[in-house]
Length: 451
Image (cartoon, rainbow, N blue to C red):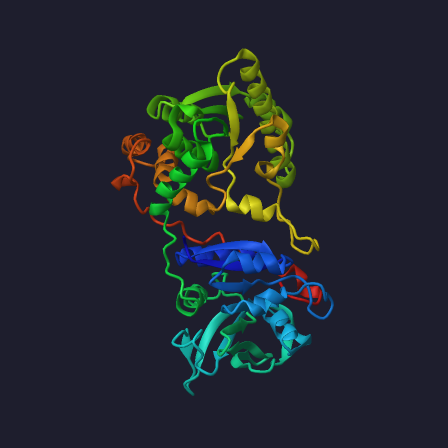
């Protein structure tokens, strides 16, 4: 059982980055909406809780608060941006609209040598004050500390840019440590989850494979599984992992939509049917997909078209297989390559304050339409974690035209299907960088609140 951190999402579009940084510290975490029940928080068993940012304003939206169980849990709590403001309001401090709003780069002075910031700085002033280079994105600010708190950080325009109650292990910062623009942000979050919360740091992808294989075998037993294979990273890694666990109990339907690279569809078949000896049925639907996508430029519309067509083609092929009495005739499970961002980005809260980023067909009702149970072995992983899996890394490098060791990757993936431990050539690949952390949006600059 891994240590875990609970992240409560108040609607920020960069909440996922908090989870990414925590996972990079090898600590398991989950994002849940801020309006979960007290019972949920008590039952979650977190070693620490992080409150995210939000586009809202604490003095305008009185419903957007952390549940009381957060403060009663007896675990460390870190508030980020709006999370700091709701912490202040709920614990007896004050927040007000600011005449000077901060959106972008800022230099924050650390105060008080708190456990969270001790020894963490980017430079020091001639007077010896430790300074942090951070990213700010807020319109409101804390104007009065709650009882028991002390000042932890400040800027000229935001006198309370950080606060702490170290007796209760409550910490809060007005800036965003999760974005790469905050230079010491990853160090700050690691300090919180590993140092203050005491998490062991045992969330490592090398050991995840064996855990996932064991869970799949336990969940599926002797039953049959059908999986829609697109050739992308997620469904391919899911297929390889499930095949490793249950072998011929899995049937893959490869929907060739014509959107892969040149000859990549053949590589998919070579990998799964040729090397892994998995049961794969290839359906050429490229004309259908490309015809429907002709002239479409909006990304969200493209996603919906691709997702809808994939579901339609997969359902039709599944019904044909069932009618023919072959393939998945006895299948009771539908496997999907759903990953954690699919779940988070498609979600919302009971109060509908969280921001839906984009739609994902994997989170739809296909299992109910087919009358099958759902198997999602990658549901709790981010994309870079999926790639980091040994079998996932082998599959991905197999199809990369830029990879010189294609034969080595094929052999690695082939041996992975029956090995009980991660092959040496698949172990601990380099983690993908976080350069995709785009500059946080400043679109809310004209409105009160934070991001």
